[in-house]
View (cartoon, rainbow over the protein chains, first blue to last red):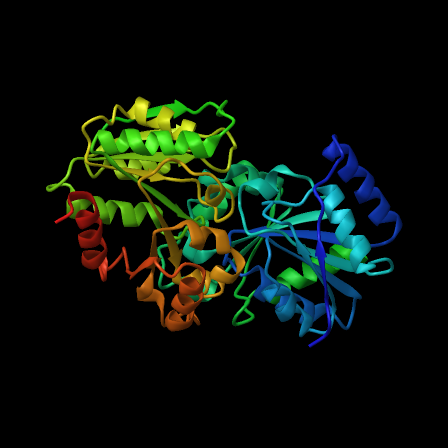
Length: 220
Length: 220
């Protein structure tokens, strides 16, 4: 296992997070670093999806990961096995990350020159949707067992996401999940969202998702 | 479907929520009303578990339900089909309920004389754990697809819960979930917690859970 650092994140002192997020986004663009903010409920499969995504892209891109968690480091341990640079961010009970907290993480990670940085946000469909992290794009994962009614109940998360990954499609038969209805509900909230049904476990759908991501970064 | 009211909850003005929660808890005790605060991740099965629980207890107890949601009313519609009194609480983006918000809900519900009131909290393992609602007991649902590592990642939620319901055990074969290891992790955080593995879908385990709940309320 690769060593990783644990960073205790300080609460942000900036008053205007939206402005601060815009500044961070511009700085990342100048640095040619693509920051993907990955959000979901607890247990939707963020870490497994990340591991699978990293393994498919790490020979083509330089990648690093920031793992936000309240106080454990289980996910950073898992990610570090892929061999990419990882930092564990402890939010000390806070349910989200804002732009300044993200900047602290990027500094701690020493991410300059990295093509792609993933921010695995705190598992939560409410608070992370309310704070712009300054990321280049927002991605969210909804997993089949959570149900197709989630867009009705957590609309903001679906509205602010550029990409929706629908994970655990290998478990479709066990759960009542209407894929068509779910996507219809999502598109009503956010017509431009990209949707990728996948199984991070079996690998199904991973190629379409990682190809899309690669094109976003390298534009080819 | 039974009619239900939608109440827009106001942000609490009380400074000392813990004290306020204690006051509400005492008042509920005087009124012989048992308030169960039910928490979980989005999609863990709070509403399905509630419907199944209500149908097993509604002939023995008078029951009412407060459904907290950011802004939809899908869960209140589902619950209202059981025939019990329901109110939908809109938190207007807030990720939790505190004691004063719970009191607003109880007042809107007109719950006096009710044996058992369920509060279905916002789907979130972080914020609701941080605010005492004044409930008689706290219950949380962890579902099999979320994984057995959740106690490591959201310790506070497991610490403040009196009961842990482990739902979707009918899907055990599809997911890598080590029940023994999960319970060991939970008991390390909270040795006194009651644990009930169930499937709200098939009904497995529901009897043990509802019997326990009935005894807590009626003491027999």
